[in-house]
Length: 210
Image 1 (cartoon, rainbow, N blue to C red):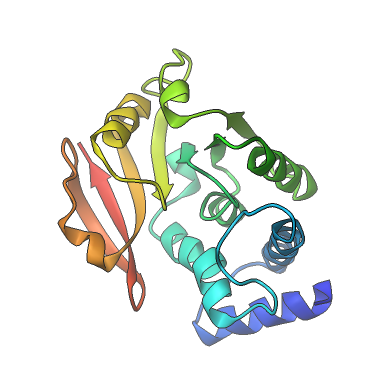
Image 2 (spheres, rainbow, N blue to C red):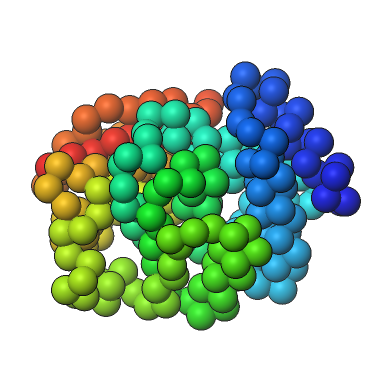
């Protein structure tokens, strides 16, 4: 699909859902979605069907992060995204809130290469990629207790993950867990749910804190 058609498609979907973003952000969303589609042909970045771009794909990759961004502000500071994969929700969050400092953590080299290329092409400032496991990054002294936000999607939510998250979070930091509503009974210790916001028929943003 041509970039102009993709941009129009995304713009129409956002308008249908009552989401308002700047023209420059629409352009960035379309560029990101197009790049993801191109790379996904050779690198398994996401299981979401991208071509043709369905409402479900646009909602999953773009709409959900934009809805989540409405509950944040650029003053939230430093976002660490765990298991970044194809870049959503991290990159759309950064586009929606350009003042955020962003670190994406991805263990697979080719996926990390995509994330770097996307950040370069989109001219995302204060954006870096760490290639390695979440547990490795959590041991870095320069990252401990630094993140005001940690975002998670499609990462196994177990005790090891929550231990790493606790290591990244600064005092009063929050966790943005993009999850299926069916995951509501998961063990979150040592975190508690501060708020939960619907993102779609079967998905929600759970905001966690210590």
